[in-house]
Length: 140
Image (tube, rainbow, N blue to C red):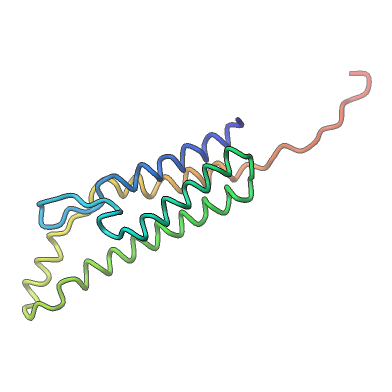
């Protein structure tokens, strides 16, 4: 396995592990991972990571590159959607000061660091070009 393939493989494995890491801590009571926050979205991210791993195993560089970029887009989209969900979850409360207080009670946890670096690691493995053919030097 080439070093760049191993880097992509490590990125996809880290992405799968990051979906199980704590991402939110609502009201300082429990930790939520990606599946507790949004189960269908977590399954899609998991599926993209598995497709990326299969692409690495079968040496399909285009599939690995596509899965790496899709995983980055999905993680960025999940971050913005979670910000919007936190902001609009308490809009039913008529008191704006209490609404803002409740928004501040949902904390982001360390799992976001893994979730952000995993697709970047997978993309870093796809950036190196495949070594081209070098003809042998005659007499050397």
